[in-house]
Image (cartoon, rainbow, N blue to C red):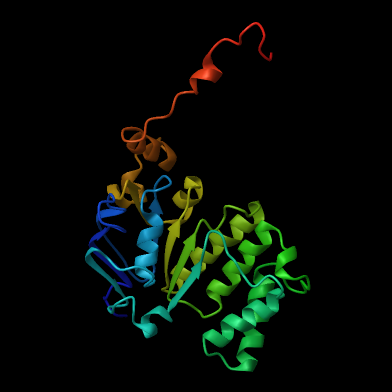
Length: 261
């Protein structure tokens, strides 16, 4: 197996407009075969910008991003990536099997292979036999369909953006098993999630970002001291730069005599 990292991010900086603060400021990490890497941070930390750079949807202002030893703009490199977004948006009047047939065509799969893979991933996702159009799907069903399309092409790199946010406990178990199975086969997984307990269970390494900078990065078993959880470590790091807001003054004041009780 090649020693070339699947993803290499080096001194990555991104500023969307002149005069704006840096969305990402000097982030460096690498992701190799068989690894599960967690990107953690509060809203606005720069996680989505990093993912967009990896899949070629935005370019660095400075620094370097490589995908399978090439640039993210290389179509052959991107073909090895599966991506499940946080808020999937599929054509609303298609059924689940039709959505997967569409993505299978984009992947260049022959018709027979498209049918075979679609049936298998729909079975895995708990959507086998589902005949309703996507517009009738619940949030959890859409998330399951997003996961199904993400693995349709047998990706070497699977990027999951909040994959379990809308899933029930059974769905979360299935995602954990998926990550374990793929990494055991030599694939790599990049996970964005606010559910830190899930990240702690499935990721080998995590990076904690705040305002575009990495505050801490390393193997989970080294980053989290014995007796603590990843969430506790995360909150200790984040609290220094994003203190908890106070209750709005009008809510903290005693109600006036004529006010509502």
